[in-house]
Length: 505
Image (cartoon, rainbow, N blue to C red; front, side, top):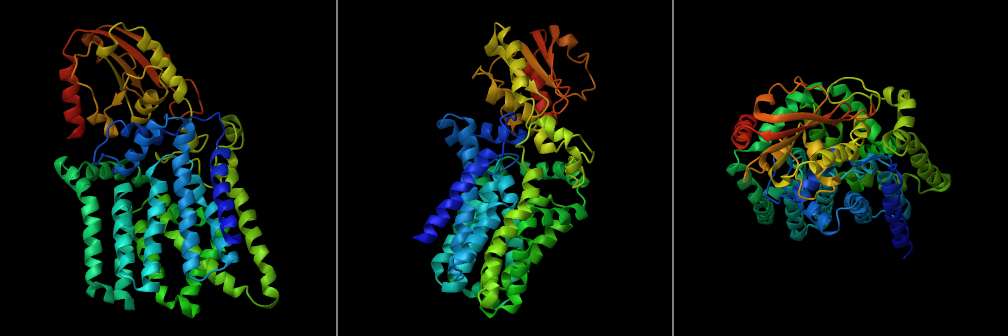
């Protein structure tokens, strides 16, 4: 009963923190709008992500599409991650101290930061942790049911984010290095693989039918973003993500070789090394590897409980818990948008010293990119609404944006529920409405647009007016302009159809 109450306390604290650490001055983040819009276009796959997050987005729409529910589900998957770590510690015979230490370490880690955004990352970390938990249980019990549970978790993990493949690429060779290689002679192993394949199959068929757009997206990501990622930064971020529980992670790695009951679980050490090495070699973004750590925190917490179980060392247990809390304070101060944007800018030096002002473009800016990506969206939607309200033929009006963040934010905040803004960017390229003639276009253009006079569109429309501009210097969309292009003099549908083909190929 006492353990259940402690667990309930951690879960409650989890949900409270997820809402408390976001200042109301911020909007949703750029990526959240895209994932929410996917709920209006349900499919077995998307250019950017697999389908599970779209199912949740659809549920959020049914619940009213409000801020509370957008933030609820990532917090829920974070809470479930704490629960799985808790159950893993119980499976490893950990008692209340180990359970509390592990739950606390997860609560105040980088996962807390991941869980403030509606993105597939929260699902990804949860499924990594769940897969590792099923492996622990299979090693402990040798029951085939845990292999089937692993197959289901892997299948839905891949349908949540393809990052799950890196877990498999680390786990399979790790199994071969240990006595657990005998699993390859177990028929239930292959049946569980079959279950995972069946779960993933609809998404694979979607990719096949659509010429594997995700591969093209990955190539573009590598060209535009990952090329700016430095391996040294990736390694540094791994320490920052779990700075408050670094001693627990070290205890886990040591425990695999010094604590006899952990010997049979040594494959987790090898799996960690293999997956992390792959991430480093491929110059992945730092947060891709976060799913590796919850299982290590479970092992480290149990080993520390054993080390601090005798004599005067038992009095160090409260110190360990306080150490986790104390070391997390600095992390929380810099990782969460709980201060106003103006105050964040005033204190920009504390972010710069940790490299957090360096954006995906490789340049230094005046605030962290994620924070800047949460500003200016409401104002943009209001500007577009102003233009949209002036058009008599709204059903023949297309809102065309430069990027997916603009399109998604307009769809989310606009008072016109039929507006359905689109872009030639990300999944929106598949959602451009060409079933009706387009006579008017509301054009949303980024600040670095090379045609501010709209010379390209002048011959195509009777009039072109600049409706408004984003002048928020702290917003990543600062300088974005909104134009109203009225009275088409050409076949706009045909022109846009050509642009779609060019953008795809």
